[in-house]
Length: 131
Image (tube, rainbow, N blue to C red; front, side, top):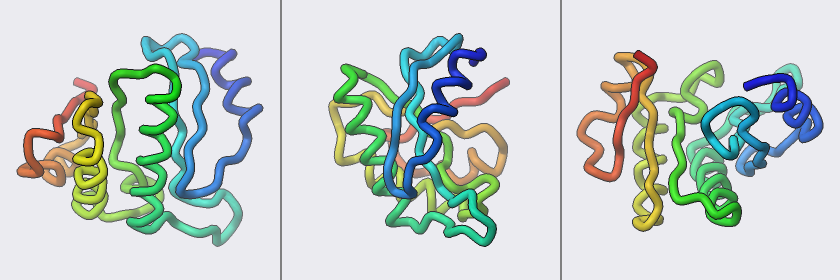
């Protein structure tokens, strides 16, 4: 995403779990990147609950709309290093996405386990791959 993106991310520094903050997209094709933390960076820090994931997703969508966005893509928030259940995260996000029928929302499924977690959630959830 480039050095400017990294400097901007460093300047933002901290965002509480359940909230979101936006930066420019740097060298990415996206106009903005919305950051949604799912774990505290302190040792033994808190991990996001399903309610935190929902709150963070809603905050990200609100930021997207405030910035004039018409679409937004999400990974399975909290299902990576934070260790959340992929299926639980996918269900939580799908429920949030239903609240925003006029926004084009993409749920990115990068691995076979991700694709399995999003399978059958309905037409409001699409999947993407890096391959």
